[in-house]
Image (cartoon, rainbow, N blue to C red; front, top):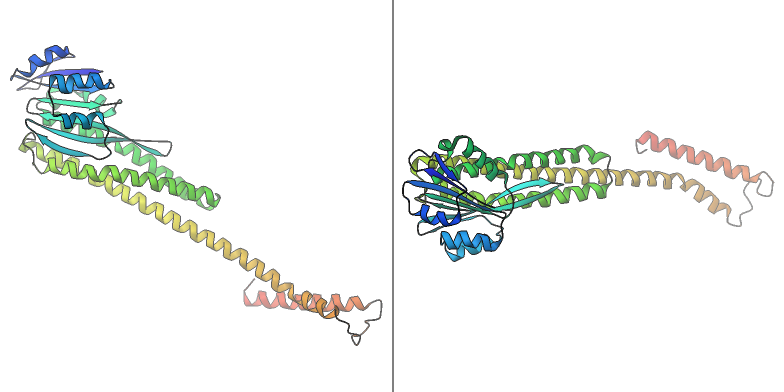
Length: 323
C-alpha cells in the first residue's frame, strides 16, 4: 500500500492525500508544498517504482531497503539523508524486529516498510487529526515517527520484565531443566534486544548532534530526547540481563544446596549402617569363643549389639548437629 500526504510548506496544513503516483512527480517540482509518502506492504516492483522511478534515490539506498538489514545506520546522500531503524515487538517470549527505512529531504519524507508498523499508523492518525502540529517540516514528521517507534519498546520491555519476575517466583518449585531453559531463552532475547538498541543509539546520536543539515537547529533537542529514550532502553536491557544472571546464579546455588543435602542424607545412612556391617562381618568368620554362639539365642546378641551401636552412633551424630 502506497499512501501520500501533501502539506502546506509554511503551516504544515494537510492539503491532499493519496494522490496518484504520476502526480507525485509534479508535486516534487512545487516548492510551496512538502509531502510524506509511505511505501508499505507492497511488492519490490511497486517499491522500486516509487523509490527509483519517482524519487530516483541512490541504488545502494534502494538495495538496503529491499534487502533487510540487522543493523541501524544513517547515511547522507545528495539532497537527502537515508536512515535505517528498527521497531520491536515481544510475543511468546521472543523479540521480533521490523525494519523501517526513512528518506529525509528538504521538502519530502519517504518511509518504506515490509509489514504494518504501529508507529506509522499512529503518525498517520496524528496527521489526520492535527497535521500542523507534526508536519511543519520533514524533520519534525520524522521525529514524530521515531518517537512512536521508541514508545513501542515499552510494552515489549514490560512483558519481558513480567516473564523474568514469574521466572523468579517459580524458581523454587520448577524442575531445574525448566528454569535453565527459561533463563537461557530469555538471555538470548535480551542479547537480541541489545543488538538492536545499541546501533540505534549511534544512529540517533548523529542526528541529535546536528550532523546533518536536514535536521534544523531547533529540532536537535527533540532528537536528543530520542537519544535519551534509547539510553533508557539500553539500560533496561542491561538490568534485565543482570537480573537473569542473578536468577541463574541463585538457581545454581539452590541446586548445589539440594545436592549437598542428598549427600548428607546418604552419608548419615551409610554411617548408621557401619555397626551392622562390622558386626555381621565379624560373625561371618569362624569364631567360636563368642558367648552363646552355639546357642539358639546367639542371634539375639548380634541384634542387641548392632541395635545399641547404631543407636549410640545416631545419638552422637544428632548431638554434633550432623543430622
